[in-house]
Length: 115
Length: 115
Length: 115
Length: 115
Image 1 (cartoon, each protein chain N blue to C red):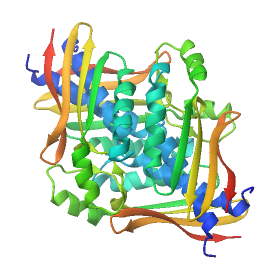
Image 2: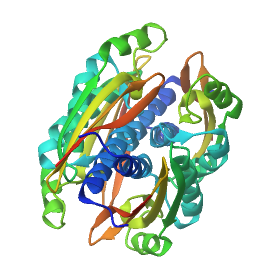
Image 3: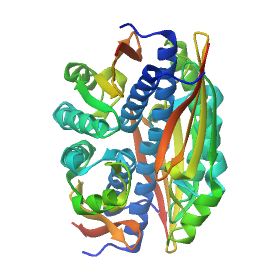
Image 4: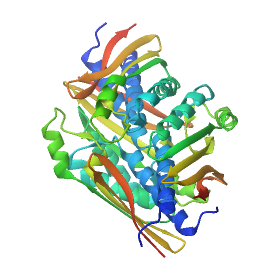
């Protein structure tokens, strides 16, 4: 069947999540560079079509705990160091999607589809 | 509203597309390395949950035309050098999505949502 | 032969350049997101060992000229949209390296090795 | 001072290492996709100037041990899952560089500079 508009809106939300994660995973990050990285991630993804807002929270406490147990004073960005919310507005359909840890897996999920 | 299963399936398809594109965009590529890169992209994304198949076609003729007009004998992978089809099977819903150039823009689109 | 300290310093400078380029190439970028991306790139790479400073200049005029000729209002970061200087201080040896376009190729080069 | 030819050769080797690591870190990987990913990494980096050979060994046993302790059946490529050797031949100078774990840190190092 042809996709519906809400299904296309959800596809767009997924694209933004995959982009955000795989563009930036692996970036060297520390508590002092966390804020600039979060801002850049938000503004980069907001460039993409139909993306009305992106909120990236780099979990500095989790990052500090990681650094306390290793030799280097930075690490690579990965899912357990961030929480993300992305809002897509596609032809009148609003989609809110989030990423947070689900046990040991960074789970991206649709929260709401409206309109 | 709560997302439906087909909407979640479309979100999953979007994640795979964003991942594929932004993990591999920028990779040094030439006609002789195109086949190994395409295979690695397919097998890497097929690891992701609910992804039943990925087909990546690196457009060697387009690549050759690009290289003919520049000084280096390789370039960076970007959307105009590939066509991609991804099939997701999420809780009984099959989604087929593709990427190809739409004018100058690499357009990712849902083709079919079934079940 | 065993590498010398200045040779190791130059190797470190190269690592930083390859990291910066291939971590961030492909990022969606527009004139309005250029500043946050440049800051994040600088602070991310400054986390790496022996890296005393990184300066990233995203060429907003070049970016605007690119966008004027295409359908989307953002593009993907690549070498022709940036100039970069990286300073490494490795065991008393200072290395200054830069990237800028050399015709159509983004050339990374050692400028000076001191000490 | 102006850089010497051997110093430039070492800079080139560093670029290749930073490229390899940050282009491919974060790629979804499992024991069954490890071989295609390793081949693609080798051939992609061998495209770069002055790069005579690249050898990537994805450590399938380490990967299997990681997967045994987590919920998903794939993970993201990072330094502890690979060993890499890169050989650069720059204007008659051969450089051999390698990456392997040094405790918990993926250490990239110059092994030999000849000529």
